[in-house]
Image 1 (cartoon, rainbow, N blue to C red):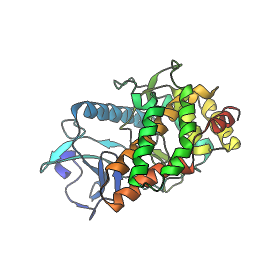
Image 2: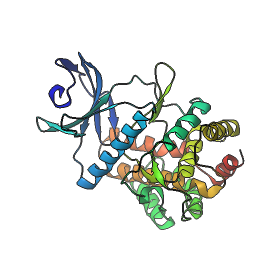
Image 3: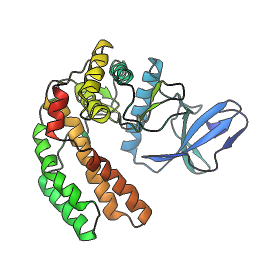
Image 4: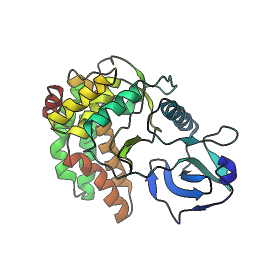
Length: 306
């Protein structure tokens, strides 16, 4: 790895993964040239690899524009991923981060999102169904039936929320106001406070075309909940920093509605397919994130009027 990414002449890898991402485990590598986050990349298909490369280019453009994000380390030939002894790896600069926190400073959050939306970058990853299409009442009925049959401990709680999930789908389908390359994954997992108190955004693997207004709405849902004051602060900070998006009505929440529904459905699918208690607990926790903080029409109306 040192040679592939020119990371110095000597180093020490952590004894095991220090974090896990969607596409692989993350290890820490300390060398005489600095500290690095090394991701062991699972096997991915060519189309997904193209999207990851596009996201990396967006991250590099954001870094060049002064956005606080880890610097990507490429190989000497410019590749994002290197194969080292048969293992696919990628690297970026190490940043010491606090844990996920939905209570991040709202002014800083608004300014960060505005800065991201002002990055001059035209990517090649288009609109994805994950951020725009409904799950549908029929599919939810099948999911709940399967969960009940397997004795899922969260089946009844989720079933109580299904009518609201289906009702929210009425806000999907309108043409987007504007499209540009967005992060599309600005949950608290991917926007963290650094040890010096500033914010850092990372994991651009899901970046692609989206409406900035709809991404701003996602940020309001994640970091505000029903706190109108925080929502107002984020919106004002975003606008003052030159962010192009505006949240004017319920349909601006289409992306977060679709995304949360698909996340919950995927969590259920993984719970049904998992074979160990550890995996079951992990996937149940994924679903319970929505059960504990559900998105509703009432909440959306509250955020729109904030």
